[in-house]
Every structure is written in structure tokens, then in C-alpha cells.
Length: 210
Image (cartoon, rainbow, N blue to C red):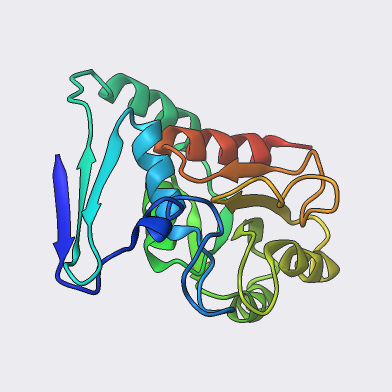
């Protein structure tokens, strides 16, 4: 069990009932996406755990995350993945406005021989791509970002280099990939939260596409 507590303003019952809903936020318009706690909830649930919250207005909050104890051999699986990617030498541009997520993605991919470029916003990413357009093989980009979304960023990139491949990542698929959504069906997409194995396998799949 991991407990995180604060002595802030607390959470009322109405907010507590909805706070894990995707896109629900108490922040002003344009100040939050409402995906933070939803993503945390997804990670914990995917890991076989659950979250308990205790809070009252004016009395702070305590979040308790319960995770199952797991004992298993993972080295063999990790070595298999590393073997399939060890000889890679492609360059990957990672664009993610969440610093923590971006650093994790870069850290997971860097041991496999990739050259990693990274950016925290699409405007800077486009400038970075222009500087390395003859090198970048794959764009890994978040979908929902300020100024322009991931699809709009990729559309700008393929105008410069049509052969560049893309892998979209997002914490919520509904409204992102569907009729009228940001992305079309059939795109290369990985939903957050994802495991290291899922990320490396998806990157290999996308890079190996003709």
C-alpha cells in the first residue's frame, strides 16, 4: 500500500464521485485536461490494484493505492525484447507535454540502440524535426497537446518528410479514435498506461511496417 496525503482544502462528495472520470476537472477551462487521476486509476487497475480516497472539505485528503504482491521471473522476457531491438539504429522523436511520461518513454527505448530526440511541445518538436529531418524514422506523439494536436503535428512533419512513421499515444481512446475523433481508425495507436513490453513491441511493429 502506498499512501499520499495533504493538508489542503479537501474534496467534497460530488467531486469525489467523479474525480476518476476521464476529462472531468474542477480547473478553469483551458487549465486542465481531466486526465491525470483517470490515468492514475487506469495504471493501478491495470496492475491489479485499487485506490481508496478519504477526504472532507477543509480536512485535506488521503489517497491509498493498494497493489498486489507479485513474484515472477521477468528477466527472460526482458532479454527477448532486448534481443529483438538490440540491433536497431533508427532515430525516434518523442513528443509528450507530460514531462514524466516523456522521460519514461525515452528511458525505456534508449537501451535498444535508438537515437532519441525529445520535445515537450509540438511547436518546438516541429523545429527539432526540421533540424533532423534526414534522420528521424519514427514520431511518437501524444494526441492531445496545446497549440496543435498530435495528428496536426504529424501532418506538418510528412510535408517535410513523407516517409516518417508515427505512433500516437493517449490516455483516453474514446473521442480520440472514432467517428469524428482526432484520429482515424487503423492508425498506429498505444493507449496509456502501457507496459514497457507493450511500448517496445509496438515500436518494433511500426518501424517494421512497409
